[in-house]
Amino acid sequence: MKQRTRINEQIRAQELRVIGPTGDNIGIVSLEEALRRAKESSLDLIEISPKAKPPIAKIMDYGKFQYQEKKKERDVKAKAHHTETKAVQVEVVTGEHDLTRKARQSAEWLREGHRVKVELFLKGRYKYMDQNFLKERLMRFVLLVPEEYKIAEDIKKGPKGFYLVLEREGKKKAPKEKKTGIKPTDMV
Image 1 (cartoon, helix red, strand yellow):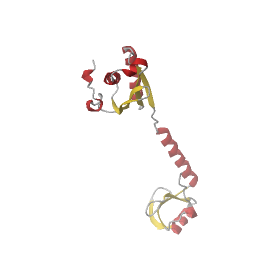
Image 2 (cartoon, rainbow, N blue to C red; image 1 turned 135 degrees about the horizontal axis):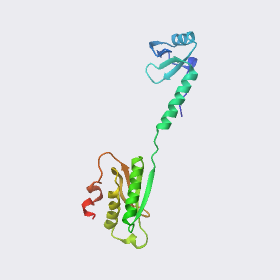
Image 3 (spheres, rainbow, N blue to C red; image 1 turned 60 degrees about the horizontal axis):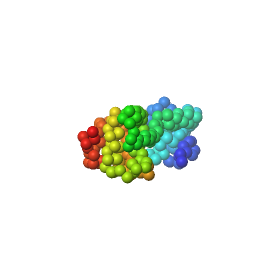
Image 4 (cartoon, rainbow, N blue to C red; image 1 turned 90 degrees about the vertical axis):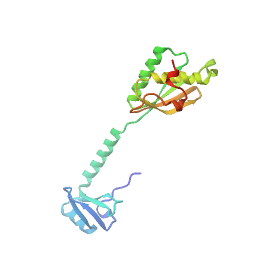
């Protein structure tokens, strides 16, 4: 819940650090003196930072203060980037062209800042294949992704097969060998 801003007589502190209407620092004054100065300039005394020692108050128009606060909130909301986890699904028998197309799509999502969940979908007899072979097929797809990434979640067994999650990164392209146990040179 948002803290309510105190103005004029609602302020409880006896001493305040006051900022004048033009932005100049008046200094530490008593509450009565700050209220008197605000009334002289026909403005409000607004408690800006109540947790500071002593609390900070500013002499300004309360309507203008509310407008500025709402504008700041809108700007923060507009700049916030929401990341999603996008999913791409491959099978053991997926063709090379489809793998490269899906890898390019995954790279595009990574560039946009999203996470990518890569699933190796297993159906029928593929569920009973050698797990190392299946993990190798998954890593083969991951190595096709042309964007720089890091493995956020290592290979895990899920209800549909195996999956891992990729995130965008600045420097490394290939996954670490010790995490997966599979070397990129083994996949030919």
